[in-house]
Length: 289
Image (cartoon, rainbow, N blue to C red; front, side, top):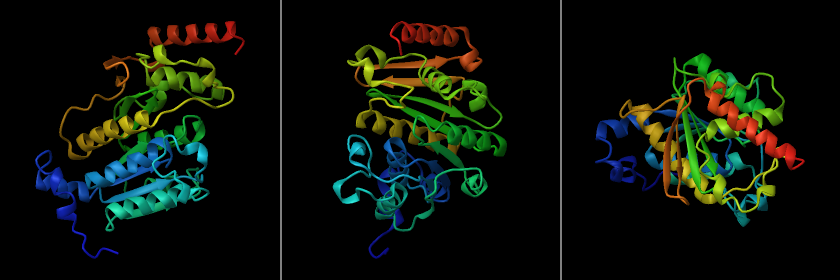
């Protein structure tokens, strides 16, 4: 129902930071987001409030009480409900004129073409351990020339990487290939955050277990991800502002009040990355992990 709704009035306070013509342009953009959990859900709501007019959203999961600490759609009233449906409704409550195409079975080979059809930008909201889906989505973006952003919630901060058409690809940066999933997890973690700002205040290292696919999280990290990713999205969609694409990256940590810009030519093939991964492996072996 759109009674009483006006796009111009709803997003008028964006004007000044964007022009009216730019706001109208954002209204005509279509963004794909895979994953409606911790980061994906708040990505959608943030971009909806920016005035983006159309979305493709995917997730096969339902809300559980373990999601309450960080996921925008996780509430007592949504327990057991599909994440994709809940977040679609929340976004429609912001802008009832939105065009939202839901993919309630998640992302898989048979729907990738439909998921990316007509899309201007992809924002990664997949679970950290969703390796096949993440590999497939970024490979499709590289093939179709779709800009792609990934923002990782690390501790109480965020690490952001953008992959632009014609530039370094996700696979070239992370070097996943056909490696075992535990190795992919290590490469993803180190590749996302070469600066490692979050490490010094991890009070219980046993909370991270790559083999068991678990790790700690905070709502602050997820919200910082959405702010940083939405700002990158604005620059990419409006072609305004400098986008520091991979192998450049950015890691901001609110707990430590630090911002580090990283540059890793060759991605995880860079000597510093290889050294970091070797050190982590030695430490884990010494701990019997």
